[in-house]
Image 1 (cartoon, helix red, strand yellow):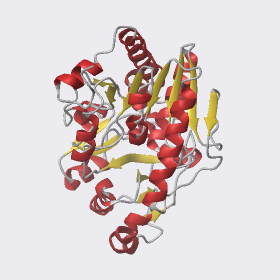
Image 2 (tube, helix red, strand yellow; image 1 turned 180 degrees about the horizontal axis):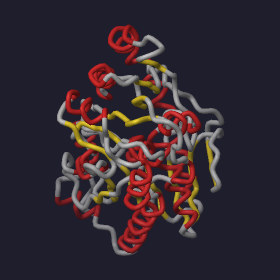
Image 3 (tube, one colour; image 1 turned 45 degrees about the horizontal axis):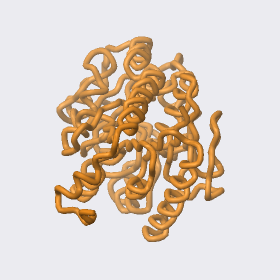
Image 4 (tube, helix red, strand yellow; image 1 turned 180 degrees about the vertical axis):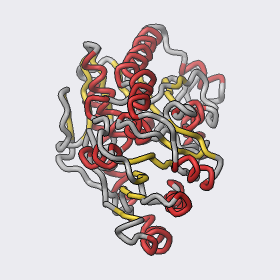
Length: 359
């Protein structure tokens, strides 16, 4: 089966640093390849994958400096990709909202993975596309949506890209956007309460520059609290592989959080607030601990009591890219079978007072 995986055009696949959606697409493409399928990834020209890639824009562009420019670029990329995919792809798998708007014009089965947290405007938008197969990335995310027939498929990770840390574990770490909802300020509080040094890695996006300048930067001394910049795959392996624990003190309903799997793959237990997807990803005493607050997290940080090999074994058993790819392949097969039957969209729209004529 030839599957068009349409990514946003801004970040390369796989991402050089930040890019959760792009890492998901890279892992899915690799998993589909291993199953004998033919993924075609629509991305930008700087992407590096074993499968075929196609692009309209040769260079990545991140962060986006102008919302209007970004929206128009995404729409241009998505419309081109959807049109191109009609030539030789059996399934179109969208990962961005502009692409979803084009699904009515695509005479192919369409799947859409939700990568965003719940937003009322997005949820209302989704309701207009009943023939699309929606896939949530966590049960927590799915529970906030009213989409009939939505499936849940957890993200998976290619463990071959991650090393089990074998060195001394002497500090805490957190990796993610330097943003209030990621709880970097809580991570600093945990470090101070536990007496353990903290290493912070992540992108400082322009929209959150004020948070960095006023809430985080004044506490960074380069020794006890250290900011190491953005983390590519090599830095992640080194940083996570040397950490006592990975801190995930989120203040929002995180849709998934692939970095939790990356930490486990390096043998590092995850200490997380019990919000969003964390209760689905973290198993108490096995891959980490769910904590009620920063004080509880600090207490666990002093002695997580979880072995590195156990963490890696847990993610290998429950969150592999192979398992994720098998689940999506099943979605594609069901979609293809369903689409071979007469479409019901026109009848539904007429019954709901749609704008189609009765003729």
